[in-house]
Image (cartoon, rainbow, N blue to C red; front, side, top):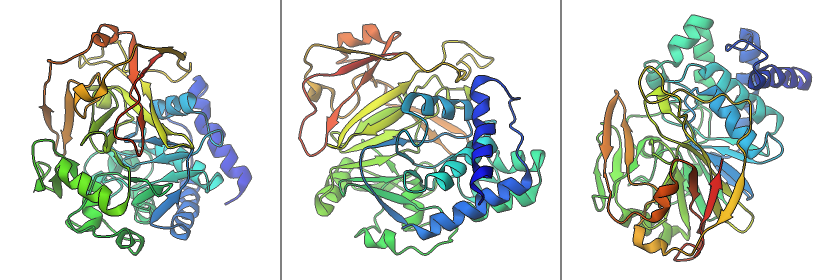
Length: 390
């Protein structure tokens, strides 16, 4: 694909961050087709299990919230300033899935060795046919465009391994996953089946209330307990599982004594939730920190707030706090006393309300967001926490 055209598409899409263009960025069907064809070739030329190196920034679900995607880049640095790995679910539910996926594909083409995209369960025709992407393509273009995207999605990789220690996927573990070569050997292009390894990597969820494998409320795949996370990490000499797929209040949430982390990067999800979004930064020592996109305080029609405009980068100031014993908070982040879980077919669950054992840091909650640090390979988090004011 012509480099000048890629640069022009990126420029047009990024112009939205300064409010210089209408909400819907003008991009042609021919340009979309070129983006999909060129990126598909790159996806197929790279492994299904990407083997990446830190430093890298990891983002979870974006779901068509284009202005929040731009906020993520303003916060973490626009490519190629930083390396990125996105964990899937780029389309559906948000109003600008086309802009969102086009910018991500354009960056993949321009920086193919520094910018990486995994497949989410919504990068599947049977799902995004229902939850908004098909309708957006048909309304703004035609069904042919949707089919072009579908062909591209069928070539996306499904997992990534960072420095042989952090395994990343959209959903979770699978009872069928015995070794990582099984992921490497998945043939593409492929549709997402109703069961099996690919399905679980895109659909499975952790569950603190079970041991082993359980039935998933979504009606697809499984849930898995902390014991399965520990067993998997020990068997494969890994330190962390990093996944997305679930709404969490603070944008990130730990599970299984910080052996698994969920990252969700769409703040004020669907305009219905008051959740923050998060991005996990992994430095070259495999220290993981979290940058938070706070939810909007402005209330919308739903009473939960609208998406923030991306025009101004958050002001960043770091303050060191007194030493905390992180172990007293189990395996949840220090601010995470609510856990939100989205179940497909728009069934919403609010799980695990916990109000005991909260620290005085909660007094800061309207003003600051905690960064929970985890040094991989060590049993405990560092003694000090960092407060990020934005």
